[in-house]
Structure formats: structure tokens, C-alpha cells
Image (tube, rainbow, N blue to C red; front, side):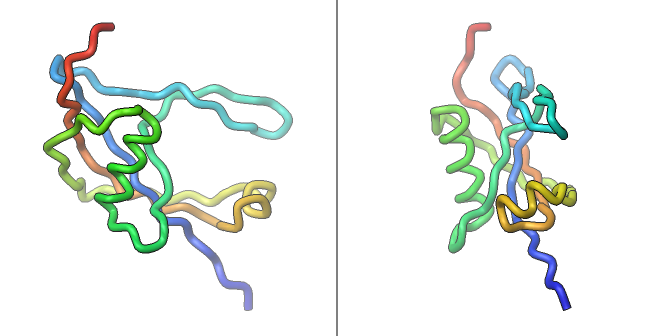
Length: 110
């Protein structure tokens, strides 16, 4: 019997002091094309990490700062299955993302 392997991840809706939410422009290979899309900061939970530790690490890696506060876990998560070519590459069949709300504590000039 084949065992499904699910990757656990965290993601956050990040709001700044002006009340604006952060979206990151990212891209993925869909078939033979590279598609751009907007997404929230998110990433995988590493072995031995709590969800909060993983969230802080991912925000630091993706945004280059640790100026966050007021983290709140939402009672929302979502899951999706990876396409076969991604499954073979990363070793996971699916991903479950636990969602959080996070305040960015620095005023950003846009």
C-alpha cells in the first residue's frame, strides 16, 4: 500500500501599521509555462519546529526582518495535492497550510 506524505506549512496574512496587507509576487512552472501570481508569505515547517517558530523563520527569510508582533493563529487551514512532477521532485504528495494573522510593526513607505 502506498503511503501519502503530507508536508505541513504555515502562512500569514501580514498587515502593516497603515492597515494594508502584504502580498508577494511569486511564480511557478505550470506545465511548460512560468506563471506569475500573488500569494501570502508561507513555507514548510521543519522537523522539530513549532508552528510559531516556523512562521517567524519563514517571515524572516522571505521579508528580511523580524519586526512582527501580535501573531494570532486562525482556525483556518487549507490543503492541496502537488502535481506528479512536483511530488517526484520534493517527496511530498500534498501540503497542509495552517494560517495566521501577523502585524508588521514598522511603517513602510510605498
